[in-house]
Image 1 (cartoon, rainbow, N blue to C red):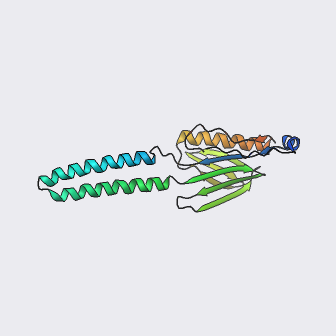
Image 2 (cartoon, one colour):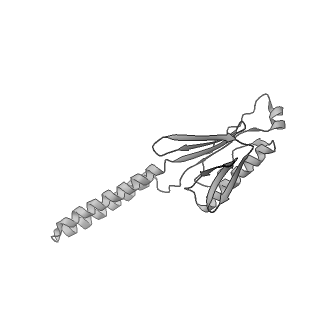
Image 3 (spheres, rainbow, N blue to C red):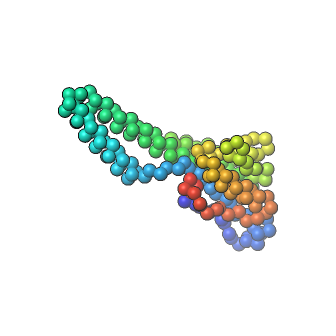
Length: 180
């Protein structure tokens, strides 16, 4: 979901002269499996493992039944960790002369970096997406694919350029599932 924090009020003329508005983009890892799909998949895996385990048990290889159960638990654990990692977010905002980078970890902790927007630059170098500011670099979107990084870098670069030229900042429309 894209959110736009554009504040137009009585000072619309002043905003048009000096720039205004805001830019907001939230990045998150792509997850193609929904909760409903996960339940269906785990039901199928459990069913197949149970039937295969019963077949081995009936042939006298009863220890194999336990290994099929262990496989189901390992698959469930892997998906649990994957869904947990999917809660990660990175929010990049440009507003009120500042760039704000807020990182939300899967366990709910957040970390915020903020710096002056005029000196900020967005770079894509060796497959990594960076926002730089006066000698400091902040990597963002390390969970994104190459094409997604290129798109995000372009969006941020255009927003920073709009800010520096005094234009009206606006949050972009999404074109990929990793941006909300």
